[in-house]
Image 1 (cartoon, rainbow, N blue to C red):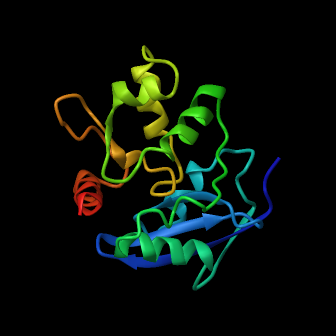
Image 2 (image 1 turned 90 degrees about the vertical axis):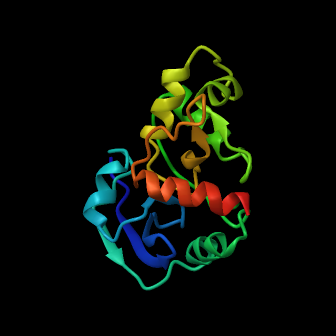
Length: 168
């Protein structure tokens, strides 16, 4: 089952273009620092994947939240709905990740513990790697023990910028 028609918009940010795809209810399906819908659409779970993605100049409150976040209002993204589908642990981990505050990043081990499965460090890393809704589900706030950045779909320079931006 697919989700029908979705809408996308791209916003300029200090670290490059940021594109968001939302469903008809305004829930984020995928987002990231790219101008390419073709790069984002495959990240959407097949049961949510739209049959058509139409471009818009603006997505209202979603675009406002992206702009506000990049200007320093880190809570602006918190109220934006996100739709992602996967197994029980990943869906729960994404919900937990949305509660990790800006400026207080956690290690993969800490993220696994916050998600209720302290031994599931690889599962926590998988939740970050499989997250389609970058920024709104802030996987950039998770790093390796010892301070290593770990991976980030949108590049380590972007992750470093985001973490520094959130530190003020």
